[in-house]
Length: 96
Image (cartoon, one colour):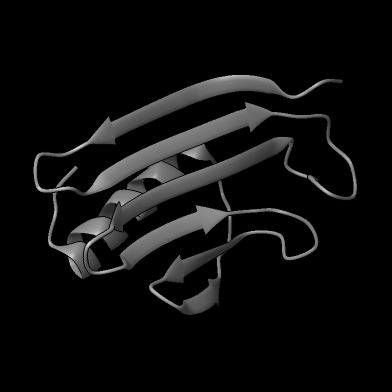
């Protein structure tokens, strides 16, 4: 199964911050046992502060707050997006 883009949203804010969300449906396999591939990014280019959530191989589900990486327990797409928005609000002070 070829990856099917389910959602792609990109927004540049007036203050220079950038939001980009990409979600793909993929075949369930060892690399993507949940059948989803994703990259969620919120960055403030002038300061370099960022929130990033992704699940690339070989790391699996994880997130970055600035330069620190943390494991992430994936449940479903709705919780993923909810958690991402909460990280952005808590660590960047922006409500999405």
